[in-house]
Image 1 (cartoon, helix red, strand yellow):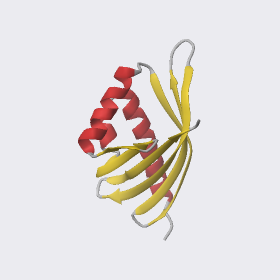
Image 2 (cartoon, helix red, strand yellow):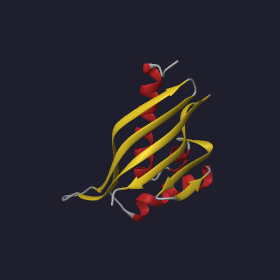
Image 3 (cartoon, rainbow, N blue to C red):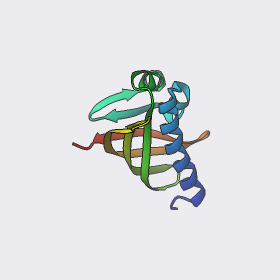
Length: 128
């Protein structure tokens, strides 16, 4: 059976929680967006597991104050407890004159667990 509308809403909320938590440097909330052994793979470099994902998220706003991750064009498909997703990303630094730092694409694998939908793997490819 295809994803129910409620699943799509929950997955869309997961995408938003991911972006907000990394911008806030909330490592616990960011890591909670993934299954326990989940991975974020950026341009071929994996960050895997709850501790490493949390550490990564805590470092982001410390290194780039005012960073904002803007996810758009979220498209998901799946069946039962498994789904795939795609989206675009624009990263900017907020301020009087916001600057776009990069753009790119995500390709995602997701799973529904007892606590809701989580990323199993997020593959990010920056636009060149």
